[in-house]
Length: 157
Image (cartoon, rainbow, N blue to C red; front, side, top):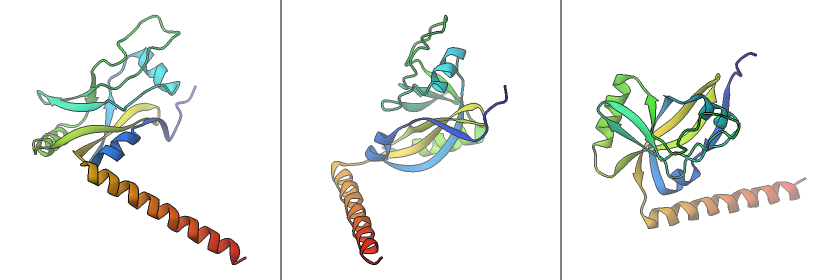
């Protein structure tokens, strides 16, 4: 059976975009067990409590929930730590950026790229409450503007 081509989204962390200012993004490979891959192919994963850390020159994904595959015989811990595959230069760059206070590594999405499981992580800075309210206000204003344009275009026909 041929490997699927392109990008197939499995899970997205919408909460991260709401809670953080997103900075540099990096695509990383995931070290997974076979049943975890099958569970991801079934579309089962949650990134809401996930984060990444750099320990001894290695990047680890923590708190991401990939539930057990119900037809598998080997069970894994759903929230076990998973190693991320990055080049040494990329790890050094991320480590330098995270050294600044208030920055963390947040997973934005898990997807399959040409059949390989990948995770997109970003250097993020936490938003304050007023930042969140400002983001919501901007989004609502953009929605209203789009509605006004749509209704104007409908009347013009």
